[in-house]
Length: 218
Image (tube, rainbow, N blue to C red):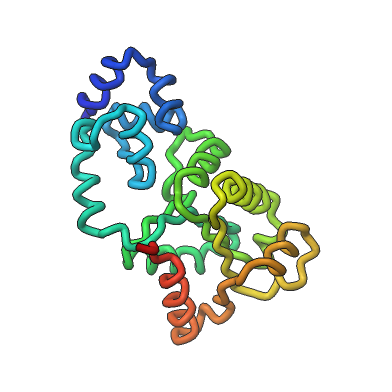
């Protein structure tokens, strides 16, 4: 169902679809989905959209998202999950547990739409989600794509002057990796320890610690 509120608001500003997308800080394809009603803004991008139009979420047709925000209280930061596809079993378990606790996550296999430009959607999501949760393993430390995501997260840290990258490890590969970014991480960041993730007790202890870290400071 077309979001008539958003469409009329754009026309009131005399903006093209491309101009509205730029002002909202999202890709052209994402903005079109918002107007067509096939996708809604993530909570983390809603404020930017409202500021761009100088209108409330209700006026733009997204009042139910505000209700969801009040209901959850935004207890946790939103997360983009950077990982290697080789670690899918761990990532799916972590994703399910984080979302069950109310952590809004972006996970490429589920959140990429058919026809999306892969690079632009990744860039957009790293830019709009609060934190980048980096899953370190022997596969991810050797992945050029994960290295790219790390660089984007670190660039955002410099730009915004706040911590964005939250690393966790499921093996010890990062401790001996010779890559520059891995060396920098292990020497400058505390890395969450999920190396015993297949064991119930150690996994839930690590998960509890991660959830404490992801809590929004009020």
